Amino acid sequence: MSLVSLLVAAALAAATGETVALVGGMLHPVSGPDVAGGTIVLRDGKIAALGAGLEIPAGAKVVDIRGRHVYPSLFPVLTDLGLVEISSIRATADTTELGEINPQARADFAMNFDSELLPVARSAGILIAGVTPGGGIVSGSLAAMKLDGWTREDATLKAPAAIVVRWPDLAIDRPPTARLSVRLQEKRRDEALEKLKNAFADARAYSKAKAAEGKAGIPRHDDDPKLEALLPALDGHLPIIVVAQRVAQIRAALAWAKEENVKLVLAGARDGWRVADEIAGANVPVIVEQPLDSAREGGRGDDARARPHPRHRRPRRLARARQGRDSHRHRRRHPGSEHARPRRLSRRPRPGSHG
Image (tube, rainbow, N blue to C red; front, side, top):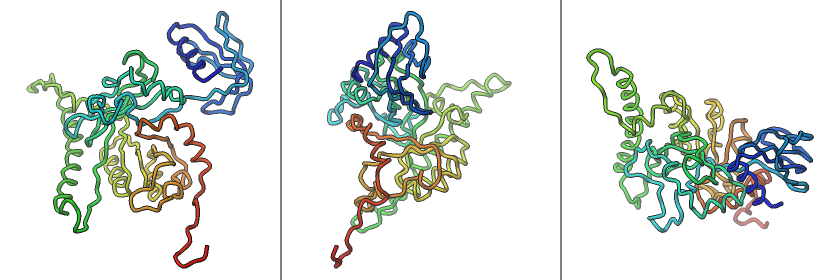
């Protein structure tokens, strides 16, 4: 039985509400040892039981998967799957709202369930994805979505699941050939940081004002969708995923999250290995990029493979992410590449040396 057939069996179980038993395969659970000759019982499209020697429920549809392997779905944590079809055709791209502060932007509302990229991703073992808007400083809210749904209600696992912030670039381009003057770059940097801090300060003030409604002398306040969308993050019910690559960005994000007392998740963190102890000390989860990405600007050509991975410094919660849509069909290769990669690919001969 092919992967597609297994997916169809699971989809039929969800659609019809019937019970399906996948029997005799090699099962690879998320947390636990492999199960040879195991059985998976699916009820209403969800795993009801998993293990060896399970009793098959009466009336269940039995699917023989002997000689096959069953793995959990791959889960790209940050992606624009379903939001962009053809990047060069603007009408098919619905990732970015106007302005820089858009916490009210909902990926689950914008997702195109007729996208031709969704079945491609499913065929590569991706059944759920963290779909998120892009652009701006506060991009919007991430939605955990199933890739085989017909409607938003059918496909949504959790929305909103997190607020996505893209930390402003703190680097200043100082060479005489720089496109913008140093003063203008510093002004734009400071303005971006001020917008981010003001957005959360306004949301806190809005929360206090709404809570005070009904008291003597307190007028009613109009609803503000932008500020309303930030309240679950301020209350600690939703994490804030901050996309930050460089050391200065990471440190600034850590300090900001501590000051705001919010649940922080770092994403990208290309230079995170340089401040791994600080990230671990703050107990902040990290969503790292793919091991096959190219080196950061100014790094060695093999920097993406040769740099010490954060997990080599100190254990912490890690996940993989990649923004691009076209790479999802190759995603299953990345964990193996990451596990097998050397600490350094090769030693380049020094100038004047002989090998």
